[in-house]
Amino acid sequence: MRVAIVGCGFVADFYMRTLHLYPNLELVGVMDRDSDRASKFATFYSVPIYNTLEELLSDPQVDIVLNLTNPRSHYSVSKACLEAGKHVYSEKPISMDFLEAKELVEIAEKRGLHLSSAPCSLLGETAQTIWKALREQQVGKVRLVYAEMDDGLIHKVPYKKWRSKSGTPWPYKDEFEVGCTLEHAGYYLTWLPAFFGPAETVTAFSACLIPDKLTDDVLDVQAPDFSVACIKFASGVVARLTCSIIAPHNHEIRIIGDDGIIGIKDCWYYEEPVYIQRRITIRRKTIENPFKQNYRLVRKVGKKGEYQGSKHMDYCRGVAELANAITNQHPSRLSARYCLHTNEIVLAIQNALDTGVAYKVTTSFDPIEPMPWAK
Ligand SMILES: NC(=O)c1ccc[n+]([C@@H]2O[C@H](COP(=O)([O-])OP(=O)(O)OC[C@H]3O[C@@H](n4cnc5c(N)ncnc54)[C@H](O)[C@@H]3O)[C@@H](O)[C@H]2O)c1
Image (cartoon, rainbow, N blue to C red; front, side, top):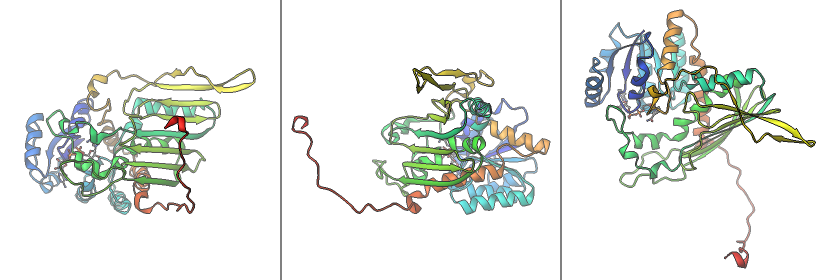
């Protein structure tokens, strides 16, 4: 399948890193509205350049467009691509607005085109291993999931020095304005509906706790930098997901069943070990076994070096899945409807900043004094 990239920014290099692993993907050209960026990227990787989106879309060679633009451009770029008859693989989210995302899915369906969206880590070794352990009922009936996507105080780290392989800086202003929920909630929310079926309700809170993240500029949008959501799946499982760029780094998930816990430390690594902590009974007391057992990964590809710098993720795996689906005329695992479902949940959490109904507490109290010996 012949692929063209729109958006030659920071993340485009991550896709280039694993493109060679997929002989069914051929990169035929790249385009960016910033022509200097496009030229720099095209020269670095020796790939042809399209001067405009129209030029790219009128090239009959292009089968799939990889939309790697900023989230606020996803809708317009994907819409133009679908209307030009191209299959689309979009970076997350499909759109920042649910109705726009739905419209894109409908356009794709009407035209018999595929639309998929990142992240594709559900297709990774770790997610597939957890899924297998769940199918085998390794921890009995699952009741509750705790998932964290905390990244620490990102605005305090020297992010202005971060560069992709071809030299593009990390787009910090855009990242802060889009917010960590839209950027990161998907890393777990693209796993959970596959494991537990469709979500039924989302009860969320989100807030912007640090409005002045930049010292030399003003953010145009105050996106949530903290969110917490409880998602109830139709199967009865409830997941609590927390996202922030404030609390210390923690990308853990714990899936709690009647007989134990399945967990990992970090979903950004495709070969992250999966552990099982079984419940044991000692002297009539049932406790979690303090010893965590490794649950064998379903396979090891041993290509970690290939993923270095991109958090050990294989960004092209989802594109390859899409290409296979088109070639073999079967639905993609990351189908448009699946991606729309996860996009809807992520937006419900993000938008809780405006739409979440908070209960206004009506009572208060006088300040309490600490004990004198603790002052
Ligand atoms: N930055 C990360 O660490 C990271 C990691 C994973 C995924 N992502 C996702 O990847 C996407 C891109 O992020 P990025 O970090 O590469 O951003 P970026 O700002 O570095 O690059 C985006 C590029 O898209 C171009 N662009 C924007 N609108 C366009 C349009 N209408 N037509 C043509 N070009 C357009 C911009 O000029 C820019 O060069 C986002 O959806 C983001 O959520 C980012």
